[in-house]
Length: 570
Ligand SMILES: [Zn+2]
Ligand SMILES: [Zn+2]
Image (cartoon, rainbow, N blue to C red):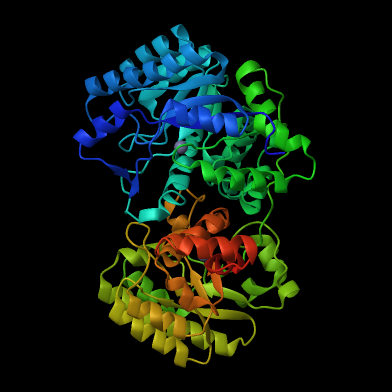
């Protein structure tokens, strides 16, 4: 089947002049990944081997703007001319997305007129952010107005966010997915989705975590969730690095398969990834009609039918997910909390009734119903006090000691009603070791809860990691601030970040017997579990790739990713 005719919507050029331009600025790799070699011949070879009838060429990250407006305009024109030259020579085999010198809007408008309107490229590629500016920026309105008038196609491609923490190889699978999702949200929250309804979008890599967002938005911002349903018909998603069953299931719960487009991400993804992409994609669908549409028909509809696309309707089958943890503050902490100057009005104080099934159905973390009895597991209870983490180290630790003590007391008194997860301040290694030891020795504490920071490396020191793994208690990873929708509150991504770093550092091996609960993560780790499984081997020496092929394809033996996939989440 993989020889079915295809269009490839994410197919990059990497001309020599561009590589040289970046070299002049001291850039020779992207997040540690060296520039692959590319020539139009390599593109044509791939197209021939995989029956790609048309490749829509574009420039990949980091795009064309490096702080100088004039230089960005020149580079954008040069890149677009390169694509146009191939298009002229090779005809219908080649399409293209024009690069624009954003955030220079005037320059972007001029280049849009030239490369898209006059010269006939198929649309534009926008980086998910340019030096921290996202596509829904107010300044960009004139450009979006112009593209709307033209029924334009916008391809959103990930770029490294400004605050990248340099996780090495985690970036392609975590940070870039996250940044694509942020770009998506910037268009939604700016109102561009309503103001410019004729624009059709293609989001790279399945939109990152977009499909995980819908259910969460329904809870945290129902109005925006309604608007999202209407906007959905204009949105397409490509399949590069997004073909695992987990990822595709998630995407197809958000959109119809006729909004999914095949892509290779060549040459950043090498030619030998193609059998993997196509076999995964084809394995997902029992009916061979769907892969053939993803390969070809859907792309043709996007480019040929203009904005006349059938409406996807407003029924969204986003799967509901029951909460697997709760918040409840022991009343005995009231004085400490006011002593820290924290407003107590939003705090959920411990009430025995909070832990009954009926109460959860009425006012739980989410409004989904919880069937506590179905698992017969008492609900884990975690500390949720965002303002605590801004306090001085000593104050945090003093509070945690008291909190763990009081929670343990309540758990002893109301045995079997809930399970107490002791808080651990992993940003302070010395205190963390004491807190872990205290929790282990307390008979009523049945789990540990960690609060990593999203702004730095999520992992604690190796010494703390070792103690955590030896504790043999379930571990919950909880954001410091759990308010609002996922991504709108980036903190909620911290559980996924933590697991990704644990995987990449190889320390996940220590947690083979640990049960993880990834709180407020919306399951985003599941979309990248498979890719992270590969990284687990890649971080070591090259020969481990052979090992990977053997374990993965022949033995179907999962390593670290099974820990990720077995983790509970809400
Ligand atoms: Zn790409
Ligand atoms: Zn929580």
